[in-house]
Length: 434
Image (tube, rainbow, N blue to C red; front, side, top):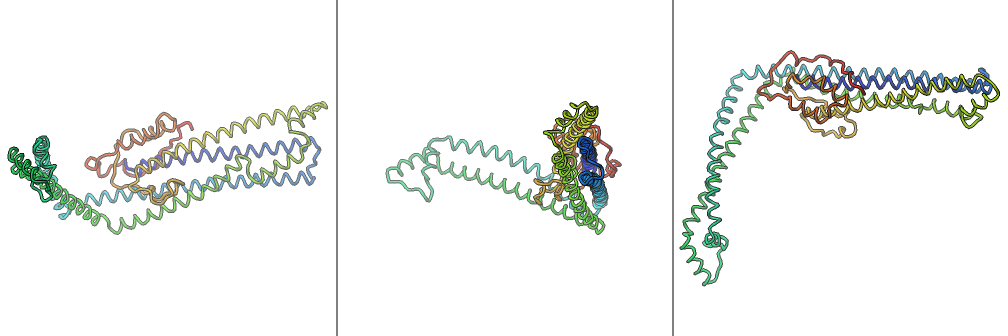
């Protein structure tokens, strides 16, 4: 399991819930059109507004225009989201191919004489570090214990605090006489040489270990440079450039989705211009405090029509309430899915976000669309089931991300290539209840 296949699961999950939200928006917008048409029909019947009158032609034009533009917006949004999904999948396919090719190149490069020689030197240096580190720790422990005895000796500590036998020592004759007497009784000169020797031994041992670590670091850098030189072939370089182009295409496609989604949301809330024009027409033509009051007045004269209209209005408004609730649920589910997508993308990305888009519009962040190569994750746990549990609110986001991080294989245990590493479209995950 590679980062690409894991990320494809999260991508597909978000796209599925976006598709569900788009369908909910379309359904609710259509119900608003029906609701407006029913109210217009009721007022026309109530106030005898002829179909060929100016008022009737005016409102019918508005409603027809709204219906056409709403359908066009839905079709454009559906197409734009599909284009964005396809471009995202294409990006993942190229990333998977690059990862596979790099792993193959690394396997071939490990057989080169220069790589084998550098790896041998690095292994020898790492093996030699262990006894150095062990000796340094033993020496440091011994020196620390002995140096502590000097600190505990009152006469020696007092003379050291006074700067005795140093270039900064300044005392009057009586104090110098007393200090010299104390120095003879505590063997100050010999103890001072011993203390200085212990400190010098510690510093020398630490310097040796630091120098050896520096040598290991240089060998590791040399090995990395050799690996890059052997794997960065023209084919890989071309793939990297292609991936960079695809990243920008993904961002552009999702940027086209956003304004269409906002427009579809306005239609679903009857906040679009034509919907508001229709509501103003209804308010202008209504000669009562409300449509319900007008129906009550009509019923008072014994007409059977108001009761039928009242039932139709009630049924339609109940459907509208259900559709609105479905939008809220779908929107909440999409945000929940996107939170996983962005968190997983950030946890896997080898780069910190430097473009500034992550905090404002994560889907436009180029930094986190790039994924690491060469990393592998254990085939278990079942990642699709984990995502399903998260979408059903049975698993917290932090717990899910930590579980995935814990499944990351160390480089030494990660297989060079397995069948599961190849890219395949993510399975449908729409099992969660939004």
